[in-house]
Image 1: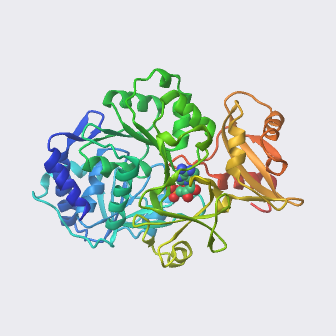
Image 2: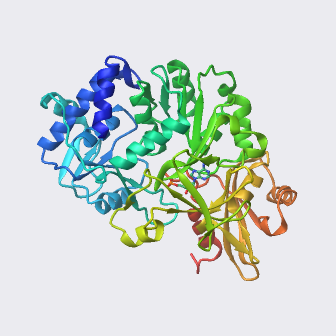
Image 3: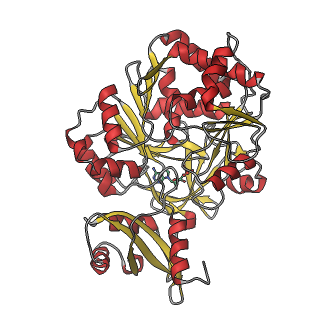
Length: 492
Ligand code: AMP
């Protein structure tokens, strides 16, 4: 089965019902099938050949989705770019992916052979031949390249195939969205280039509408969620924090059944407040670019107070193991999380060494995350392997310290890193953003009540804002670099 087959079938089954909504623009299932066929034909007629990579740089909206699935039908390989990245990052991705084509609303960020100006998409579509565009692709050939967050060094592209994409849809339908029906509505408030995009096909195949909000703000989200009676949405934790800060959230009349969140750790205080305000709709997913959004999930009914620190249980058809020194660990022992399943990346694009380090020949993928199982089989993530701070010989997981800081009423954001320290090896150091004034010493005192001595931040700096990636992930590496530049210019 090909991705195009799913779109064609949805077009036949759900015809005139709305498949995509963005502001005033509505595209039906039948129209979506036709638009993607026509654009697929036009791209091939313009000189692109099956297997070519095509970078796409478009704002969150219907055109982006039409381009993505036209590429799927025409055998081309999608390389999504995010407009919030710097010109330098975009240029890197364009050349690293060896993109032959570019579709965008602005000039390409580097040299590329075939450029399609987004303003011309309607003309291209209107001038293209009728009939299905159906380039059959080997199930193990690249379907799309997804760049990793780049929170640990230069971004790498993950190769995802038709096989992995269909498995991803399957995982979602089985575990996350088992109740989808034609009157379900997905609200895309986060960039479809990233996590939110994974919700598109599961809704499409079940006849449910996908509604897109151009750019997230709590106000825009609440308005669209109420207007369209959204039943599903996806947010990264930062967005949930912002939403809960908006006083309008408490009185909003929402139809949400699932507020899926993940992509980064969430503070338990934020999560508990979210449940208090929005009800039992929170569904956590733990995944990564290499294992798209499906390693473990925590269902709404599993969000009990003692489980809020957990990332949930493995998806039904995903294997998860925690290993230390090559062997699987038992309950409460700490190790690296590994996962295996047909949805995982095939390999890193043009990085055989990185692939060999990350994916075992038998398919087990090293996530780089440190975790432990509890007695009931729930996974608890401690932190990224590379972010663990070693202070006085003890492992300090920055996430735990950040959680303690975020429990302070004045703290809205926190990032904890290790700085070089002659005595301790590394010194636990925090940067916090405040919502009301507070004294760093008082914040340290607050942590002292919650954390063992070696975990307490030795220094708490107050920052106006923390650096985040284009999808809203906090960039500890950059926090550390800035602190080093200020205090240890020789190490920066
Ligand atoms: P990316 O590949 O950019 O999506 O980043 C994936 C990483 O984000 C994972 O390896 C985890 O470290 C982190 N992450 C994703 N989901 C969760 C979650 N639910 N809880 C904690 N960390 C998460």
